[in-house]
Image (cartoon, rainbow, N blue to C red; front, side, top):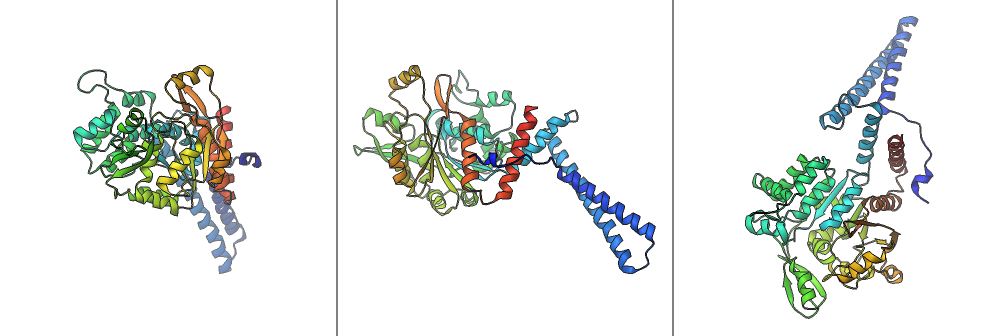
Length: 443
């Protein structure tokens, strides 16, 4: 049964309005009693003066805090003076909902991570995205080589996924130049590179870009060290460079045995470690197993924090296998690779897709030596990992992706159910706000 079904519709109460009314009543009662009864006993006079003072303080607090909330919304552009009351009410409920949402840390990189973030940001603003910086291909690789900065591509995508921007701004930041020396380079990557040029380090550049784009939550690189991802294939050959690994695995027809980073002692940002320690839930993936998810676990501070945290740890399995990385892999094989590199107990729950794709699309992917990720439930359960199933398939431009809304919905429900159920007051208030927001938007 869904938690939300346990809750009954509550009375719509505006906290600050009720507090203000209470303050007015106390003031009125104190003044009336003081004037009408003309009591001379000091204790009674002091009592009525106390009522008047308390009422004044409560009224002042209610008015100032209520006005402060409205001013913040106006300053941030969420409302304007012509905004109708229904829209204002929705915004107030939405902001209160996001602030009270669970603390979630997502770890990974690539398209899968940013897709998931687009759904999660509608449920909570307490999100920290820890993003890999092992990428060395495409436009990010060029900037890494030319300017000596960390690869900005995955971080750019996560920032845009969490940003509160107009569609035109997102289109601009995702634009890739067609010709000239900037051919195939993303404007968003250049924007972040320019931010790095006026900042003391890459972490500060990411923070500044996030601030400019009004990001919900935080995006942080997993490390500021210039790491290189390497892989040892089962034939014994060692491949250097994130972009080379799947290509060489295919070319040499040898699967990946393990991946590692140089330098091996790369340090994680303290902000990442703190976020993991304070989180209600940690989410790994979705994304390329060996080149987006696992590289983060090779940072010892991150893997250590994952083993110490009390948060529930969820792995979102890919829908399709990836040529050169996970050929023929089932969910259980993904988990084995994660445990091999990050240690046992790195995952508590696995979110897996059980939806189907049409035959035409299946044939297309088979031609590219890719298929749907299978699942052996008994093997997964023997690894002390619980399974959460759902139909998460979304087809966009002929490509299979996770449905961000469905995925976020099941993740939030799991987190609230498994982690926060003990805090009944927090759960009730959170789902009450969620239901009120849905009702208002449907009216």
